[in-house]
Image (cartoon, rainbow, N blue to C red; front, top):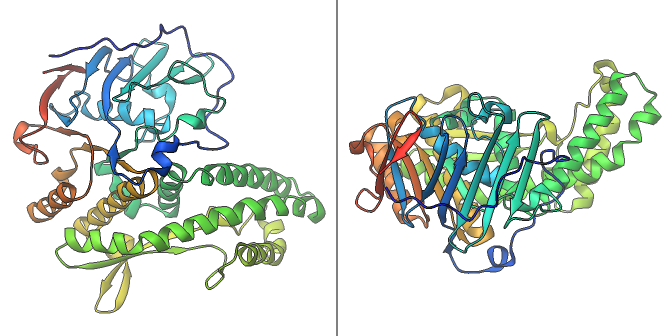
Length: 407
């Protein structure tokens, strides 16, 4: 197997003072402004004690790699380690301390891009300290490193985006927008912080004047969140419909934003802000009884519906397993399209044995879409080589056993 020791600086703990993101996201000018579909490629990966992966230095082929292995050997852990460099969180919802290898105190993942730049993320169990470096330097904000890989992960667990509650779909919106819009994350973080303090005032039974003092900040940040969500869903609704129709062989489905506050037909930010202000005022008595803020974007919904002869049916309630999985795949394809359109990157595609749950027809149509769409490097996992169906002739084969990767 080709192995390469990356030019990572010696690891000396993760430092203090780091918490999770963030205030803003700063993308490189080339990624933000280039009209060309250039690709970010991960050329090297150094792993230290992430899950069961031990200590390994890997050189990734430019086209990508197919990782073959039985269940419970660490295939998903490998993709998780890569995607951690995109968001500094587990895509499987695990806490950082759960990612540290058995009998270890620290994990570290370092990725080298073909441009020569390096992203490093580390976590120390003692004190729950996290540290991120970009080209060996700690950024002013951890968020400055978000989205550098331009990666999208497809996982069987994505069905929860459709089968789960509204919070799952809000989280999808938040991740897709935070990694593509430099201003969205700062607005979202401001909104969540203000909401937390406002809810604390309500829970403690503070006078209405104290509670309403948080309204201007909540309205300002909440307006930015709602407008960004509405605009993104409006822009991507046709793409979702097209992807779903192609994968399902002509069956129609729709994606629509349903804000908790009525803003339909309101075009200006000022009108949206006025609507949210009025909704907060009108709900003050109910809030005082319940001790929590009951209106705002923290209660938004992304609705996914089947179109059957003009009647729209909620996919969560009426969709079959195959239809829900198709909708989840369509959402991920839309996320990849967002990367191409907003950052000028061909996305790095991570596929975690996603075809195992699909029938042959849907699988073939997804493969056709991925072949025709502008995707970059591909890293996929499969239980056996016969299951490698994307870029079958161009992906180098690696195997994994008990966390050890070999060619």
